[in-house]
Image (tube, rainbow, N blue to C red; front, top):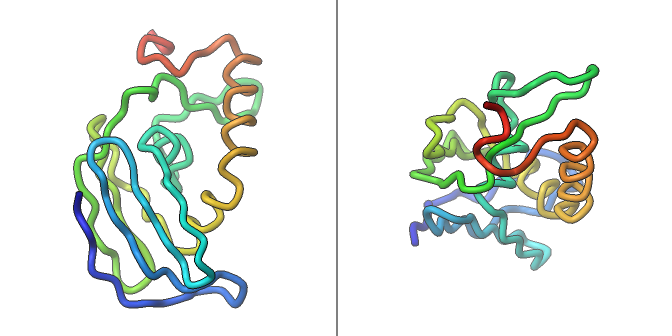
Length: 134
């Protein structure tokens, strides 16, 4: 378990202040906000919703789809300024900066986002398993 020292900052008016960020490598991140919302976000979930422009995405019928990340792990996380964190995954993806606002959004809509992801994989005949793109 790794805690990252954070300075409480909120970058939009509606997002509560981040109060805790704990990395539980390789599997997940725990974040807590000033409104007492606590979210456990898996490595796979964070990887498929990476805010990076190029995150090994396939475009299928105009839809961006990331597959094969079921067993991806988190190697480390580094604070970025007062507003976010860069996560290094074991597939060597490290270019996305997860702002506190974005983490709150991901946590708040996690179940809806996961359903949409699974639906998209099924629609395109893909899988969460690593062999999906080969």
